[in-house]
Length: 136
Image (tube, rainbow, N blue to C red; front, side, top):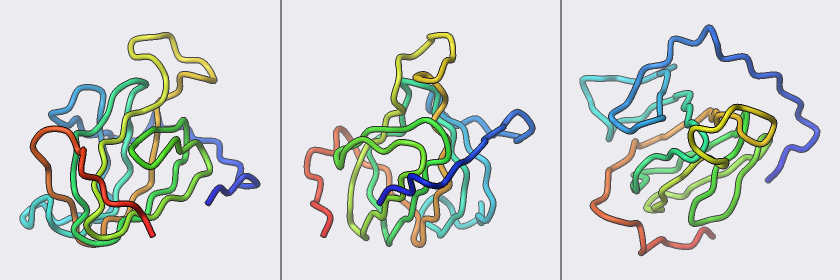
């Protein structure tokens, strides 16, 4: 689903982004229990620099994503600002922000900022996510 009429003016300079172990990917937890680990439910903002991505992972339950700025590509297609994507439990993907890494920001090379609700958390996968289950 694409919410083309949704106009967002994202200014993330004041967000206290937390770096991840993945270059160019940071996050800000809105609701997350660190003691429970990555396999617990979470509501987060995710920021991926152009050309950078999150490694292949599996959703343990439904995950809802709203693209607030920029966009990303994964095994299910390209998702740009205003796109709403629902990943079913058991789905796998490896999202990568659109654009070229280390390029000066412009309209086509903005960081991808997502609002994500992972109801059951995620499990990291080894290697590429070649066995992606199709969405219903």
